[in-house]
Amino acid sequence: MKRDFDRLKELSGEICDLQAALAMLEFDQQTIMPAGAENGRAAQMATLAAVIHRNITAAKLRNLLEKCVPQNEYEKVFLAQLNRKILRASKVPEKLVKALAKATGSAHSAWLKARENADYSLLAPELEKFAKAHDDIVVGKVDVSGDPELVSVAVSLGIDTIPALF
Image 1 (cartoon, rainbow, N blue to C red):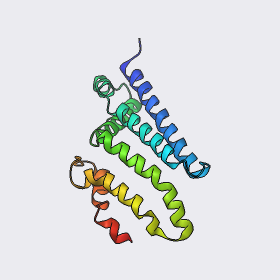
Image 2 (cartoon, rainbow, N blue to C red):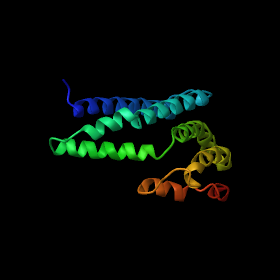
Image 3 (cartoon, helix red, strand yellow):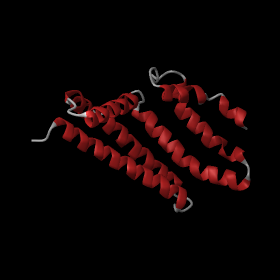
């Protein structure tokens, strides 16, 4: 019979595999994805980001983590890092994760056009979508307390800053 830690490590490994698949989609988008495929790719990336988030925040993973008793320093560190990931992900709703991933994915082609033409106003509509997706954090709908990284995102991505860029 497997120890709780071993089962937890397996589930964590599956999440890492999904994150690697998402990274592969992002790499493909930036290197060889044909023009015109950005909407489909953005949808794929959003769906996969939501699945990853759902797995990280699943009660099954949290319950297993709570049952684990580390038997050595490696396990202690592994459990602490996983706990941090779970707590951080739990502060952000899946809907927001999906919206951010979709906005990020769809903005890539606009960025390429803006850079090619040295006309960054072409990127403004995509940045506004991205900022709108961040609005839940900015207006306090997401609890960022206790997480300096999320606080930093909330402070730095106010919607009011987008028009000032152009």
